[in-house]
Length: 618
Image (cartoon, rainbow, N blue to C red):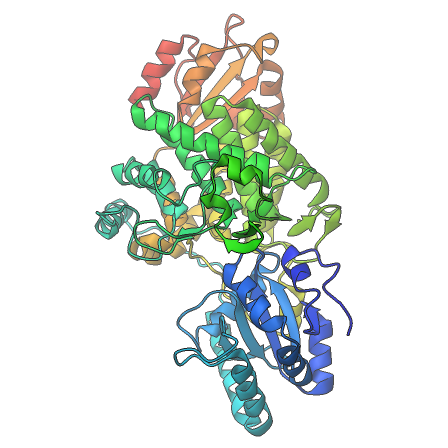
């Protein structure tokens, strides 16, 4: 049996390399083999820090007898959903026709042409409480394939056709005239959805839903601060090493699933840093939480080459036994005697963009230059290793190796957003230039990923819908729109605002009625409704690293775009087309602030108190 997963980019695939299952990686080879043998394909999808994926790997995929059954009647493909998000999205949508409890591991049975005809999630090794064993599932699928082939093909075609009907281009439209009123109602709906006893939203399981919290922070809703502080005091946060776990099984935030994801912690760092910009007791608590998250990102997830790994596992070996969460139950001395849970070192472009943005903004607002340095290391690595010679992005890498997986809208939008945040925090125009190139490439491609779709799905004519919903992190559509709107703030080019308005308008009707799943979209609605506010601070070249009280005031301006540049940097931006910085200079050799609303700027100020008063009045 050929070991095809041994050299995979994905640590998740490599963890299955020694299974007795004759796994294929995602690609045409597996489907060609299924056609040759005329057998169905099992597409088994998971990710490295998925607890139940590990369980099923131990119980079923490591079992020689079950592996023999699988090998004889099927071609088996193992997919990392983080490396191939479009594959996961397509088959997750198809699986909805067969099971309500969607999740991972996701096991989808498809024809050699890639069309799904049956799906399920975790299956136990023996029947339990009416749930068939995985062996029984394989028997049933094999029987249907051999004895009811016509019905299998009809089901596969029907599901494929249904997916094709939902596969529309990125929607466009206009914001409703009563958008502000409806947004206010959406916030009231979220307030009604709040768990008044334990905090957060809804019952169990309970997730951070960071995009919703970001939108609520922008609106100044007390619900945002209340939820963030509740989470920071809950078992969802690791008080020793910092960082948040993915979700809690119970309504009271207890019994977390202990994987710590890059995207959750990046977004929450951004939000706790914004909350920490005040001067009250809750700001001090938020600062402490933000510092813990940043420490986790940099000390645990950041890789030697500069990028951030995608997650830390929930499982580890504690006192000689495998345990989910056992490591986190130990005190500092106990942890020092154990090996920490493994890190998935796979570097994903989009998730790294979220981390770069968060560390840049939080590092600036809270005065942690080392966070900004960490963001620059990641950005420089991605620009050097995840951008092809033709300007197209790569999705993933690990070490010195690059994945051939297609980059998505999420990758283009989130990375562009990270570069723009880094440009604003450092004054380095080249980051903004590279961000604009990424956004322009998406717009030139008709608001699609410039490199095209997944090549296997595309060759099989398997349709994929544009996913605009957001749960744990912004959709690709929202990420691109957010970066484009920031480009409008920097350039004044109306085309950026117009495409954002049209795109957000196409999603707004659904988002306003389902706010818990569209936080980033609703924050874009708020940004479109609010006046455009920008703050530019120009410092003397000779005093770039010196304490500056005017810059200190600017750090607390988290409500609008803030760009801090030196005199020489200020000349580079307008030359590159960023009109906001046209004519910006110091006054009498002193740091000077320019505060603008809708590109109409007040007289420049050099006195920190004047800037503080001006910011308080906008």
